[in-house]
Length: 168
Image (cartoon, rainbow, N blue to C red; front, top):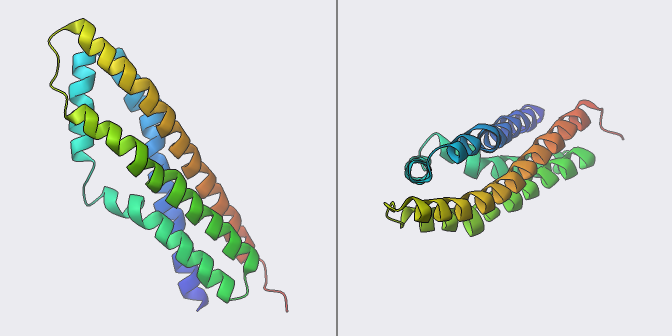
């Protein structure tokens, strides 16, 4: 049973670090780069990236990170590793609420609204659209990036707790 627990734990770490890394990359490269591009180009590029991110490579890190963190937490708890179980549970909640739920309630609707926009020929209109979209989208992306970071920290602490012998 310990081998299953450790497999779940390292899978949780890998998936959670993966989703954190994706969102962190958007924070410190993608959005900053788009903000320096002409607004019509930024809109078109963001539409293309949002259309392409729903793929088989993205699926496991986005959807399975909270699942594996939760499974790890439950497995640890039922094996007498209460502290580790709680830490993996916290990671599951952070991923589930701070990443998945936030993405579906805020970022995805924003992306869908942007996808529905025809690229304006008027540079002033394009500037207004991009300025309205980018700032708000980046704020929420930074929040979900923070949730991912805290999830990775909780999983790291959970792994450290698993390294301690079970009392009793």
